[in-house]
Image (cartoon, rainbow, N blue to C red; front, top):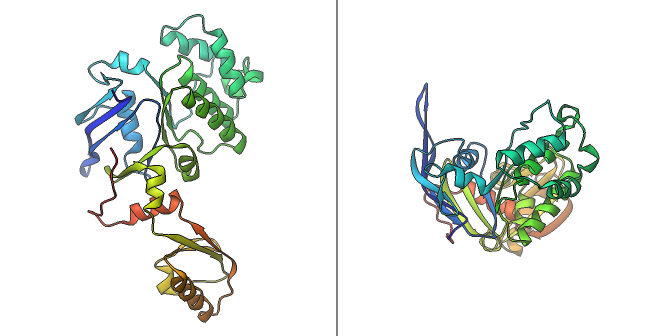
Length: 309
């Protein structure tokens, strides 16, 4: 039985400009024990799908099952199996960290779990903040508390919606070490993130959404193998010739171009030199998940990426 099953999920919102379809027949399963990534640009439908999974929004069509429990027909059972870390920093300003976790435990009817609360506080670097009021915490510390709240009832399925957005490197490392440990111990993890290097390092499989539709689904390693060869990377001062700019990914001074062979690489560099530009720090690297993501998002409608459901 899948840990999570999205079955032809659709969601349409009414807007002043008419109906807006946020999700269009999205369907895939996440197996028990998987570390699964859900990727897509802003507005692709990721958070809408997570909201439906968590019972915060109702699907217009289709079903979502959590370990066999329908999130609408059997909400209480489905919700007990989920630990959801939302994007937004939501907290009660009247309680300290330990009280917040005790209250969350009570919400799920869990008693006598002080030892687990202590472990969460220690593992997430919150032990010295246990008696601090939530209002006194930094944004990064508040996010750590959100993670602890999601895990306090020991759910078998953990849902992380942009958990490291805007936080420091220390928190990212602490969080991923702890979540990876829980995954090794059997927890299922669903992650949405814009940090593609995190998804590449952590996720066994990845689904990509574009304009509310599922456009790619496969093992992370297989998606990367399907990318267009290697990547030529270099730095320049100045603007690329228009012909190259149309193919390149430019970040500040850094230029990256798909490289299918030695002749293509030579032609790229020659074109840059002919434009009077000086090339620095030339390197050729293997394609990564960011390259795959950009290629999938740029593909014309109807472009088929191999699906492994």
